[in-house]
Image 1 (tube, helix red, strand yellow):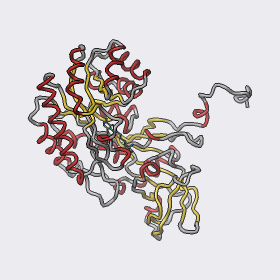
Image 2 (cartoon, rainbow, N blue to C red):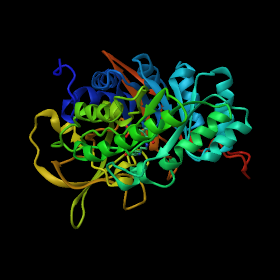
Image 3 (cartoon, rainbow, N blue to C red):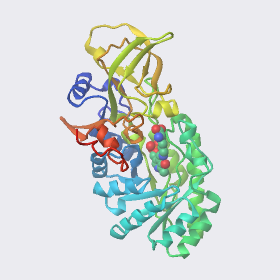
Image 4 (cartoon, helix red, strand yellow):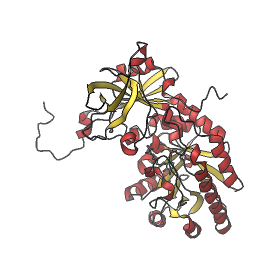
Length: 425
Ligand code: LLP
């Protein structure tokens, strides 16, 4: 029943009192992730792509308890680094469910992943450059190999995330047959081809998706003819979610149909690697209002969270819905345009400019929506600002999933200090 599993969860659908209580108990800023919603999002994907193998893109949110949840729900895990491979295996995923997509991989990453392969011989490595294959061979790797190709077409919510045409990703598609034939000759177990068109693809970009999967279909047929059958064709992730209140959800069935049309005839499993779609609307970021002031041209609302907590607005100009949870208490407040800004010493540290919201007061709690994907993962410690805590919700339970960093956590790694008494007082 689609009512039980709606395609979108809006910020207004969260319970204001419950969220406010989380901040009372755990402090601000605070990331909240609803594991039940994660399962619902996964289930919708599984229903739209019943024959596909779904690998969750760990980079969107790598919290351990989330990886365990999503693996239990049936997904494999697509990893962008040795660190993510390590977390995926620690979450209990068997090698067969782990795929490592190497992008200009540092030697240390290859060392760690090849080491992991010795214990988990079913894991798959996706190479995006010919010399990555050489570097794997140098380390004695002759396991499951997938080739990332550059399809020459990109799509997505921002120039910075349209990977499909960006030169840094993949081997040009026209080279793929030769590269794979050579790898097969050298004893690698050639299992698939891969490409990722970009991130945040919406229904309006369905034509780009169609063109992209049709190129992947053509390539898969060429590879099958010249090298042999592939086990899978991996078309990456990129399924967009609505961030604006009036935006429609992506038509997943239309995406699935376009994909089936392009590669359904091929004797290989379709793989997809959604990240954002699984976690974006399952997460919110909560933050206290600490300052309210009239500036010359706008009302500035200062909050505890900043661009170090949620980088997307500063980095891509991304819109995130914002709701004043305290103003939800029924006492009517005037609506005023406000600029909501963080504590970082950069003018780009704003979540919105002149957005119409109920007048904020110091001590209010704001919720920033769609923070489950690329939120905590992109957080950093600039301005010596410890990263926030994360709580997860599941059924009636609330659990602290990751504690808040302390200032000591941030300075702990320094090894050259002149003052030896620094810990003694
Ligand atoms: N597979 C590969 C190889 C990828 O590079 C990515 C994302 C995905 C899957 C998952 O894409 P998704 O389904 O989440 O769109 N930080 C940016 C997004 C960067 C995405 C990079 N690659 C943002 O906050 O919008």
